[in-house]
Length: 230
Length: 230
Image (cartoon, rainbow over all chains, first blue to last red; front, side, top):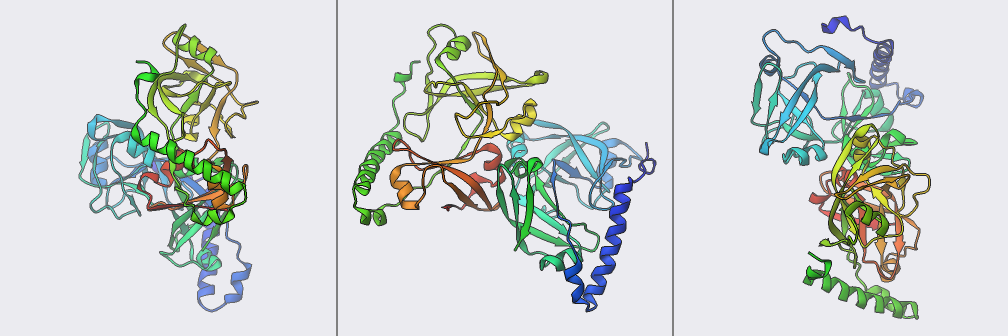
């Protein structure tokens, strides 16, 4: 099944349309119509990123064979991002493995494996907390695909908790790119995650990414409310 | 190996002596020497409770055979509490299992299984967040020991985050039994756990119990500081 054969769901299309509207809005805001900020209602979404990896085109071919391309299993909340049908096995030192780890598409310039602290303990890999893309000096692992094996010398991280914001979202909250903010999750395990990294980009929808340990610690699926604050 | 054959480590003995001193201190404080409060320095300890269970004497015999007694594997921080050498297998619906789940001693009046949210997902058991002992209406599971099987009709919980305090600790913080407080954990995954239940008892040493999800979410083992506040 090719990627193009899975139509983008209506929900995803609507999100992209809203994103275009928001982007237009942000441009008008930046052009000096600050009274618009009061009218904008950010739509805060908090999602759990389960363990996954990003791969380079070269590593994709090594793992899945010549001509391999990522195909869509499920579209993600951020426009253009998707969980691929392709999964790999991660092999850590001492021959411990985690199977069925999903690749997220599209392909990237560096291969990067994002696992929780619980996964890191299970694999026996001392994965540092890093923002996406900052993998210098991180541990490696072995990736096993149906067509071959990739020995990574680095790239295994615990992704730092972060929030994606469009410019209009950032303006509404008064947050800047790179700022650290707090996410409060209400419910039966109320928790405030501090040091949440703001990543502002015109392509982004407002979405916090926690890992499974964080999501389970606060029982996110049963949360009664979520709040972002400086 | 009998329980008596494991000597209490020096560290544990020292803690108990300190506890007696603190207890004496709390009595003087209660008797009207409030100037003492300023002199008292609470020693805050935060520990992760890995999955475990408490058992009744009847269930212990069913699992480990006639005459079975819990024997000490490791003394815990709270005086008299210990991780036993005995472990069981937990069997959930859909035949999923977790092996090597340790019993904590001494035996209790009700059998209770305490697991993380991650464990609950793995087992397929919808374990509610409950304080220890409040197991009415909770799900059950099957326990498998070397000598037999116990079918629990209830008792599987996710233990609510809590803090054990002696009376002197409670006085120093100004906390009352049953009060909800906050634990802030500093480090590379800074997190504030809210709704931490205070349990005040003269037998207790000051200690917060988090589960593995909470401990992993805040990277407790690498924490640079911990703070309790109202």
